[in-house]
Each structure stands twice: as structure tokens, then as C-alpha cells.
Length: 159
Length: 81
Image (tube, rainbow over all chains, first blue to last red; front, side):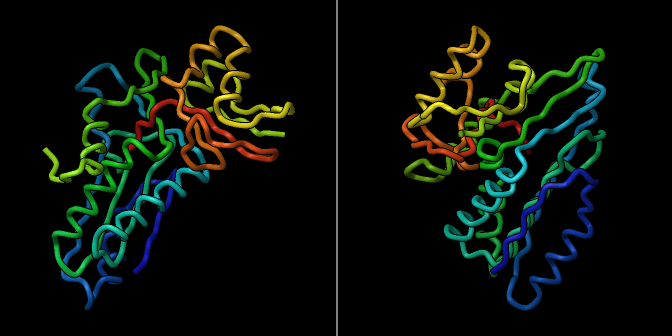
């Protein structure tokens, strides 16, 4: 069982991250689930021309590791990788990568979704966008809050 | 001495990312009140509805105890991922 979390100002290479996870998983794991979050082409949505992420150095890593630990306690997963990009980024860049390896697929799917849902409400990262030369902080979405809340619902069956 | 950090919008609005508090403070609620007394913007942006708190890099609540040398951070709801 391994947990690997990181925060980076550099471009995240999902091929490399996936390959490393696959190598670590050989033999014991029958399932490997990865999620990659990308920066959308903001120019088509609005006059946003840049995007940047601020974080709380130290706590960000701790919070991501805590989520990985919770996932490990809740599902039979072997390896958990969580990488988050910070700083200024371009359209098409990888913002976040979550990779889970487990013996069977259900645990890996659930753990990956759990980590992403929780990350959006528990990990100290803040997005800002630039339009017309001015930076604006992004507000948290209600949908992100409800996605995260479903994991603590008594039935736990989502919606 | 308590180290207080502000992030994201709070840092911009309050014009500082870090300050130190020397007076004795027992818990998050007391620290919040002390900081909110600094002015209108402080009062507005540090309200419990707007600002989350972490003590020593773990999410905290109003009754979380604070001692000397603790690091307390205030920040808006998170928007990563």
C-alpha cells in the first residue's frame, strides 16, 4: 500500500504518472483508475485569458494525504496518487491527476471519485481568472458542495 | 505568539498574508473576534460564514483551542480541482 501526493508549479505529465502507477501495480492489482482534470479553453467561454491557482503550502499536501488515507481506510486500494498543479496555467494544462490501483475495479472507481469530490471542498486551493486585465477569485460551486456531501450521507448511494 | 495567515481573496482584501498576535487567545472564536475588531473589511471578510479556519494546517472549528506558537490560517471556501 502506497500513498503519493504532490503539489507542483510544473506541467504534470499524465503519461509518466500513469506509467509509474502501472509499474507499481503489476501483479497484485487488476484495476487502475485515473482521473485527469484539464484547464478548459476559457477563451470560448468568456473573455478570461489566464488562470492561476494559489495554495497553502504544507496544508495542501497534508489535506491531500488525509483524503488518500480516508480512501485507503474505506476501500481496498493498493496505491493512491494525487498530484495538483498550482500557479499560472494555460488552456489544456493538467490541473489535477488522481490515480488509484486496486485488486478489483469498484474500489478504484469509488476511491477516485471520493478523492476528487472531497478535494474540491477540503483541500486549500483557490482558483482565480483574469479577464480585461483584472484577476477575479472563483466562487465555490453549490454542485461541488453537494457532490462532496453525498459521501457522508447515511445511505452513501449518491444521487 | 500566534502566527496568523490569510489566503486568496482574504489576503488581497486585507492587504496582508501574515501577522502575529501577542495577546492571549484561547480559541478560534476569540481570535476571529479579535481580528474582526480591526475594521469593517476585517469584520465582513473574517465572519464565520465567509472564512474557513485551519489550526496548525488542519481544518478547525469555532471551539478549537489555540495556544502560543500555533499557526492559524483564515481562507475562503476552496476552489481547486
